[in-house]
Image (cartoon, rainbow, N blue to C red):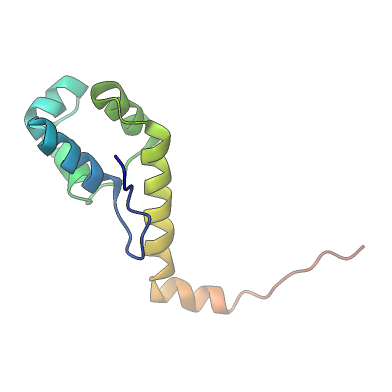
Length: 103
């Protein structure tokens, strides 16, 4: 897990996990069974269609020994990078005035 994908493009933690299981020769079905999750949940996470939660990050950590906090950091970075590209959110943000504390 040398490069956790902190580059210019958002990297979903599922991409890192997918590479990890491919490198180890583990199938998505085998991983899902080991973790007690359905195949579809694991597949959606690995393909970036479902966010990683603290619970699933800990499950991946237990199964693969990949640090859950690193996976959650990746998810947070992905969420922030994705939100910053959301034009409807950007329009809302432009209309929020700055508030300064008065002492």
